[in-house]
Image (cartoon, rainbow, N blue to C red; front, side):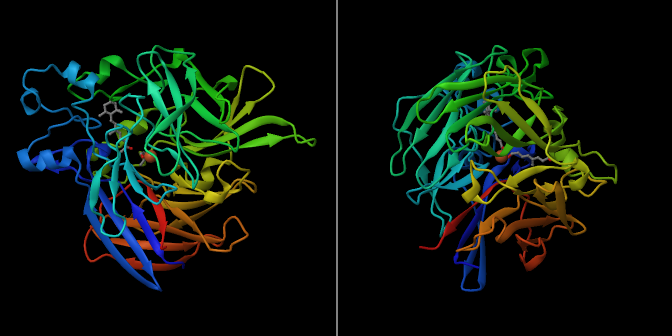
Amino acid sequence: MQNGTYLRNGPGVWHIHDYNFRHLFDGYATLVALQFDNGRLIAAHRQIESEAYKAAKEHNKLCYREFSEVPKADNFFKNVSDVISLFTGASLTDNANTGVVRLGDGRVLCLTETQKGSILIDPDSLETLGRFEYTDKLGGLIHAAHPIVTETDFITLLPDLVRPGYLVVKMKPGTNERKVVGRVDCRGGSTPGWVHSFPVTENYVLVPEMPLRYSAKNLVKAEPTPLYKFEWCPNSKAFMHVVSKISGKIMASVEVPLFVTFHFINAYEETDDEGRLIAIIADCCEHEADTTILDKLKLENLRSFDGQDVLPDARVGRFTIPMDGSPYGKLESALDPDEHGRGMDMCSINPSYLGKKYRYAYACGARRPCNFPNALTKLDLVNKKAEIWYDEGAVPSEPFFVARPGATEEDDGVVISIISEENGGAYAVMLDGLTFEEIARARFPYSIPYGLHGCWVPKT
Ligand SMILES: CC(=O)/C=C/C=C(C)/C=C/C1=C(C)CCCC1(C)C
Ligand SMILES: CC(/C=C/C=O)=C\C=C\C=O
Ligand SMILES: [Fe+2]
């Protein structure tokens, strides 16, 4: 194993004093680090010191709007209406609890869906260094939680709730300034679809327009609605738009079957024998166009498993987007969902295959009955088979692939996951990327809560 640090972010504290949050996504961000140092493993964890977290600790109450929680009127600006503070962004959380990325310039950035929740941290001490200030004038309050980050680029989408659409933006390493690549207007609905993540190919950025859309009326509600800040709008239809990375032009825009996804896995360009582009293939963790997964992530559901099989089905949804001007795209299962127990989310790939034809993905899968993904799975998208790693009582977080230095095979590397156990225990596990067998496990001397997304910071 090369030397370096695996960092994982995620909600980890779900209460303020004696007030308990209701949804998984509300929790205050907890970073966990696994530092690999010449065969030794050193583990650490630390809270991200966001303004939202510090204010909650200082005042013993919720002070900012979280994913589903809204402060009581007297918790924030007394005389400013919620609506005004929502649209200036002042009341929005900066609780950067979703992901962590290493920028091409080496800075390590924690993110969530609010732009103000972009927070720099020190990957060695896990100390919060401060807010990442975007120096451009693009404004906006929200962005995709998952930018596409490489050594040379940072690409993200900014949903536009005023003029329904999405800005595609990019930022060079060493800068804090995003530049507009292009813009996509929504084709359906009066608001953009929720965009937690999106995929890219070598030449294109794909903009998903999901029929689960931001909801103007739910955004200002004080109490959570069944779909939180969103609305299911099947009549508004679903679309995939293809934007050129170079010109920003829309190269295709097709209607696709209705879908629900948080996470795109990867995408690539399909060419014919003469090398002409015929289609774009984009894969995602798709929840069978069923929004109930969102409410299943309520803490009371996650904390009460009684043996009933209540995890909604999910699959690898594969979009085929024709590039010949045809108006419709396809959405099919890339493999039989029974291969991975019809549970599917929290994915990773070998980063060298980003935007390219690829064969393997790693994700959380299911061994049923369950109420949450309880297994790790390696998906072979060519042979349409899945391997499963399962340990009784384990709640594994995203299996994160780290390639072996010098590897030539796509799956030559290791897969790291942090396991929270039903009984309060926790351990880190390392699987062989090729065989999917367990290589090592290291137990934490205390509990580590379930978490979301990670990144690899190589030792320099
Ligand atoms: C943890 C995770 O995956 C998602 C977190 C999403 C958050 C914190 C979303 C926050 C929002 C608000 C506080 C109001 C505006 C809308 C929205 C972006 C959903
Ligand atoms: C944990 C999760 C879905 C699990 C269901 O199968 C989704 C998390 C989304 C945010 O990053
Ligand atoms: Fe995510």
